[in-house]
Each structure stands twice: as C-alpha cells, then as structure tokens.
Length: 203
Image (cartoon, rainbow, N blue to C red):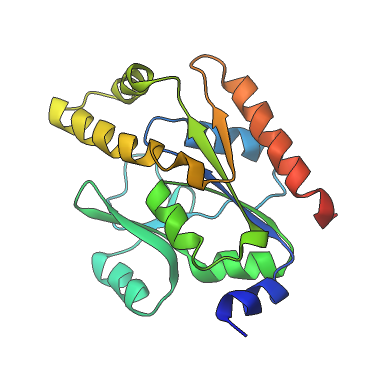
C-alpha cells in the first residue's frame, strides 16, 4: 500500500487550500472564515523573518531561526515550504495538519500555487480541496499589489511576473472563485458554499 493510500485510509477530515498570487485576497477570505467558522483549524505557519511590532509568537507565525527551519526541512517536518523575497523561509507543519485530518477536522490554509503542488503530492485528493482566487485582470491585480504599501517598481514587477505564472495554473485547482474589488462579501459567500458542500459528508 502506498503512503498516500495509507494516509487516505486514516484521514476523516479535509484540508482546504485557498490558493492564489499575492494581492488576490487569500488572507481576507481566511480572516472572514475564522470569524464565521471558529471551529475549523487554521494552522500557523513557521517563518525565519523578524518579528514585527505588535506581533506575538504563535498568533500570526511561529518565529524560528534559520538553523531551526533548515533542521525542520532536513527532518521532513514540513508539509511545504518556500523562500520568499529571496531571503526568508515560510512553511507549514506536516504533523499538525496530518494529526488534524486523522481527527476529522476541517483545516483551512492560504497558500501559493507552488505550495499547493507540494501538498497535493502528500495529501490524498479525497481529503484535499483547492480553491483558486481569481482577479478581474492584470490591471486589477497590479492595483491590489500597489495598495499593500510602498514598493519599488522592480518588486511590483517581480510580483506581477510571479502572479502571471500562478494564474496560468489556476485550472489545476478544484475550484475558481473571482474576487471582484469591493465585493469581498460575495467572494466569501461563494467560498463558503464550496466548503459547506464539500464537508457535508463529514457530518
């Protein structure tokens, strides 16, 4: 029996991935789900970046050293990880999610397309649901990126280039939901409909 088949036989929960490029609204959707469905599990990522003012360990991120993160990679403790802005590591604990799925939990995670492709190699498709966040067009996406703060033009272009690559892979996800600027409530309702339909057989 393969590892995936083994996991499938043990899992009774589902992992939902809110997928999309920077600026597509993944985080906003997750925050809305947290307020509507506090009983779902929302794993906290690990990162090597510095703590910012007002941040507390374990709330937004688990802050670890680069050495500790690289140990976690070497020992297979991460479900997925990536280097962001060519400097800091970000990643997801494998044990936390696998234990939750074995326990029948509904797990929510925001992620980029690279992370999605890493996770789909490990989590059986019967226990994994991916929802890609679409935006209206490139101008809309550029505007969203610019609204996130003052960024050098080269950084904006880097994010746009990365976003185009992600958007080109949207069809690899189970669902696509358009996040129209100014209509986030409509977007959240569409995501909720998908989630509720997918977990109907869990209860």
